[in-house]
Image 1 (cartoon, rainbow, N blue to C red):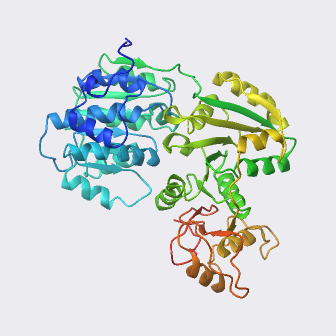
Image 2 (image 1 turned 45 degrees about the vertical axis):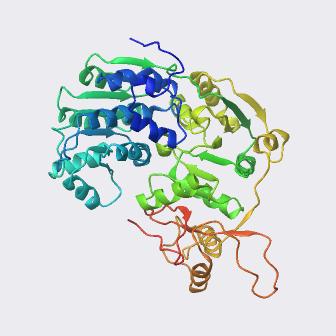
Image 3 (image 1 turned 180 degrees about the horizontal axis):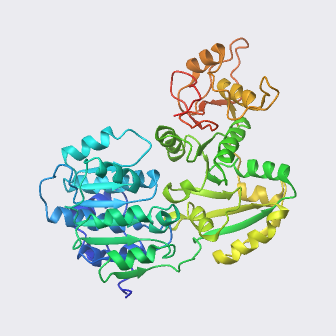
Length: 491
C-alpha cells in the first residue's frame, strides 16, 4: 500500500510534537522531504513501515522523529542494560551520523542515546549501557559481542529500525541482524529503510515486519537528481592521473572513489604532495583516524576525500559538488550509492567516471543498468571540458616537511633494492619531527616567516600525518595534531 498525501505538509501537520518541531526549526528544517511526508503519519501511529528511497533522501529523520516521539510519550526511567529503542546500521560512519541527527531530538525529550560499534574500546559503550540508555544506535557485530558478554539485553526494545538494510546484506550482516531482531519483543514496532529489496532483505521484511505499509518515493534504480553524469575517456594511466589531479583541484568539496584501500591511501598522498590537500577513508584506518579524516573533510579544512566503497553508504556531508569515480565500480548499485554523496537534499552536483580504453564496455553496461545517460567526452589534462567542470582552481598548498619525507621514503628503494610497501614503520628524522612539532597545528594555516630571507613563503603548508592509526601496509593522510609525526605501525 502506498499512501498519497498533501505533498507539502509541515512537520506539525504530520503529527510531530511541538518540542521536536522546535528542534528542527532551530536547525533550519521546516519542510519535510518526500520520504518523511510519506511515512511520518504511519510511523508516529506505531505502524510497521518499509521505506524505500534513494540515498540522500532524508531517511534518517523519517525514523528518528517517530522513535523519539513515541518513546517520550511512554516515558519511563532508563534501565541499565535494557534500551527501549534500537537502530541498526552497517557502518561506523553511518552510526555516528545518525547519532548526530537524533541526539538533539532526544535531548529535547530527555532521552539518553549511545552508539555501539567496533574499532574502539568497548569500555565507554559498556559504561553507557550500564548507566541506562533509551536508544542504542549500533553496528550488528559489536552489539552481538556486548550481548554475549552480558552487557546488553534487547527484551525491552519497543521500536527497532534497520537503516540501509541492503548495504547490511551486501556486507554479510543479515544473519546477525536476524539474531538481534529475534532477541527483541515480537510485538514491537519495526521500521526498515532500504534502497533495494534484494540479497535477502525481502526475507527480513516478510519475517519481522507485521503488515508493513510500504512507501516508495523513488524507483529502485533511480539516479540521484539533479545530477549531471559525465564520462571522461582518457588514453592511458598517465593521462588518467593528470585528469584526476585536475578534477580534485577545484574550490568546492570533492569526493573521489577508488577500488582498493591501497589506491585510496596512495592517491590521497599524491594529491597532497601535488599541493591539493586530501585525506583518505577506508577499512584499514582505526576509528580515531577515520573520525579525524572525516572531521577534516566535513569542516572544510580539506576539500578532497579519497574513499573506498566502505564510505559510500555512511558518509553524509553536505555541499559535495563533485563525485569522481577514479575506478569505475563493478555494479550499478555501487555507482548510485557513490554518486548519492552529491546532490543531497535537492542540491545540484556533478558525477564523473574516469574511463580507460579497456573499461569502455563495462562503463556502458554500468550506465545502462544505473538508468543514466552520461555525456562521454575524450579528455586530457587541461582540456576545455575538464576546465569547465573544475571551475576556479583553489590555491596550491605546499606539503609539510613530514609529508615530503614520508613521500620520499614511500618511493625510495629499501636496503634490499625493493620498493618499500606502506613505509618503513620508523618515525621521521629528528629534524623533520622538530620542524613538524614547531609548525603543525592540525589545520590548514599559513606557514611561518622564511627563516633567512625575511620574505613570507608563496604557499601555505598543510600539515598532516601519514599512516596514523592504520594497519600494516597502509597509511592515512590525515590531519595532524600538535606533537609532530606519529609512528606508522599496526594496531
